[in-house]
Amino acid sequence: MRRFLLGSIVAAVVGLLLAGAGYWAYWNFYSRFQPVTISRNQAEVQQLLDEASWVSDGSGGQALYIVTYRDSASAHRYERDEVAKLKAAGIETRFILFARPDLEGAPQSTAAERATVAELWLTRDWPLYERWMATPANSWTAAGVPQADGNLARTAVVEAGRRFDERLSQLLKESGVEISYPLILWRDQNGFLKACGCADRRAWAFIRDDVGAPDRLGETQGDIAPPEDETGVPTPQGAPAMPYPALPAIPPVNAPDANATPTPGSPQAQPTAPSRPNRPGSTPRAAPAPTKQDDTTFY
Image (tube, rainbow, N blue to C red):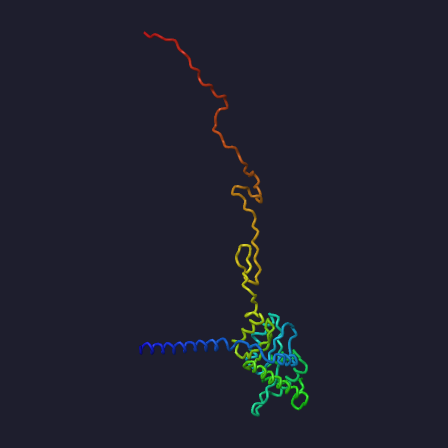
């Protein structure tokens, strides 16, 4: 009885450990990267997105908002690897940039960054955004862009961007969103507002699934067999099928060559009747008739 109780206790402990390990693995490798459906303050969240000065290439389509700051490495990776896939699905990516506030008295943004953020919020200049993203952060001087520092109006714009990010993060936290950048918001195919703190690339596949974007550029929905040529051999995509060559009819073995020129003095061969054996030209003899001779006596 004692052994039975000890075995039962050990089995129960092992079962609990396995269940806990399985739940932890599910949460760590899958569940925590899933987007969160905004269940609270949806109207206020949508109003913040509509009133923010986002920039876009103007391609149109369903809106997907990307909230980030200039030096976010994960945001750069997302724009490099995912934006083209989203555009292939008819998604318009709208970027909302803000300058991070000072942390314990130490600035987290540069004067050039603050000037550019203020200019983007005021003008929504997409070519300016492209030049800014294409230039290394340490090399960007915001040449030709009015400075925000010392300009009361532009400083207020920079502070408005910071307040936008602070308020949006507070509302999303109430729905259970873990804040990290890029902070991405969109509506799925059923119209539900969703959000994702997408610093980890393992969360990106859930966004593609929600909006119907391909996992790789050039893919099509469903399994489509490659086209075949006339011989039934699959043709690589992008290469036209080669037509089967038209060959001339093959003449019979004994047929004369129509293109051959006869040699002078050598008449072309003509078909002849089979030869007969040489015989005299007389009429054939008739067979001899039978005759009866008289009896003769010899002495």
